[in-house]
Length: 125
View 1 (tube, helix red, strand yellow):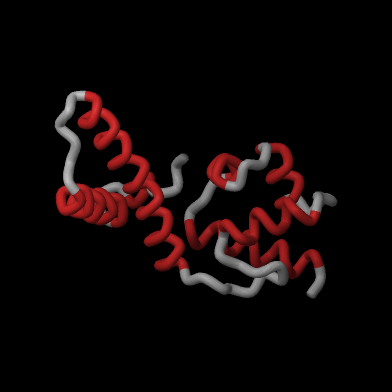
View 2: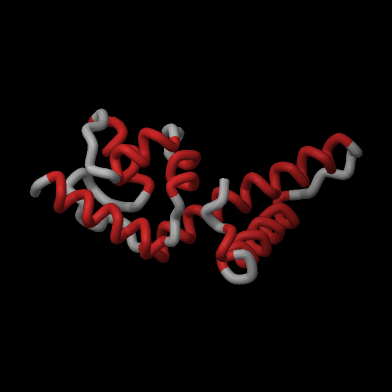
């Protein structure tokens, strides 16, 4: 596979998921300029290519290894966990921490909300 073919696959996947350069940069811990250079076809480190393709659910050759649905599910779970951890930390400070059943229910509700009501904000870091 040529670099141009990989780039086309990455750009197609980026568009399918609805990610911006800023989203990709933040979620892969890369700079905006680095991501822009990669998407423009300029030379970048192999680790940069790996970070971007992994984020998009692609292998190093640009083949799909994770479906978009699974990527969205994983992202929603990560964000839900973050949101619930904020609630739990605050509740614990007030000595009103949630038990495991309540935490799991809250996680499910947050994940469902992220996948449906707030889907457009799913990839915002």
